[in-house]
Image (cartoon, rainbow, N blue to C red; front, side, top):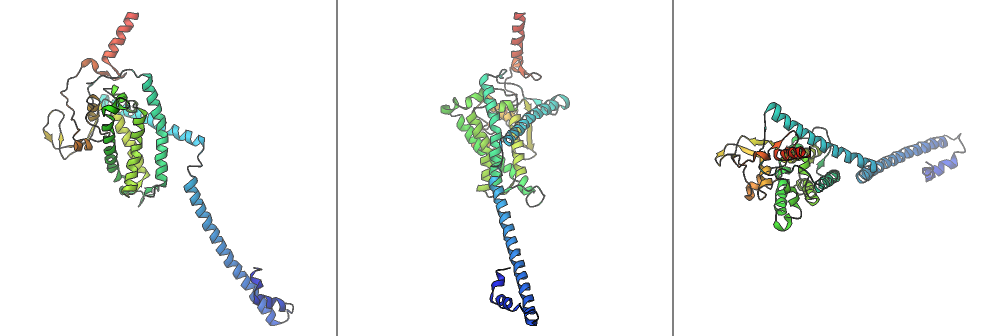
Length: 362
């Protein structure tokens, strides 16, 4: 206001304002104050707008840069506890629902044991299982952090352009196809003789997996790291390479469905998901039938018995392409003593040996 009062017109009026009886002096004084007030109002409006814009920009930039940086140690502990609790809950629900489906409803059956069941876990098994479970929360954190800064990632939960079929459901089959392409190649590479004994052999000392997530994560930490971060690679390819939008809900479904299928692959539950068209081989003969099998737990059971086959994690699509698919044959020989007592998760042979040892001690 005072700066504006220093212009030539203001100085002229200031000099003549001493004579308030002069009409011109009073008129010019009013004009001066009105001019000063208008100028102050405009200057205040511009300054406020500038400050508000700068504040919003700074707040947005701070949110982008410091959202993860502001997390303290307790936040990380709670996040890790939540992820690990979710894994344990998933494992419990898979076992409970599977047992219920078999015993109460009879909708599914058990896969007969044809390989040797690992009845007792070793110290090395427990160490690898614990280490891999502890590595899961950091993986989820890095995945969420990448999605937070990914331009094609959608976080808005309101239905519309952000949360839609094209950003939630459409990407799912492509994510599984992309993931299994790289996982199939990785899995095949881990079976190369020069590498197999150092990394992947540990997982295959279980010939008939039955413990769901426990047997699924009982792998060498290097293999677990590569398999888990393959999910991040699939998301990166979909968003960054393909330039497609992806909602966070789709990623959650991707991880949840993937964890469920990987766990089911390491149970004795016979679960098959098929589409009523296409061609797939039957389990008893090589006669084609009008059905396309998308997911089958028996395929991974075959892999644990015959390692040079069925390298895919979730789907057998790439095994069909690469010629490494081996169908399940229900007529393969079954050893009755190798079958499990599903209530305690031990083989009948193991139970018999334990009972005989107790009798000798008594």
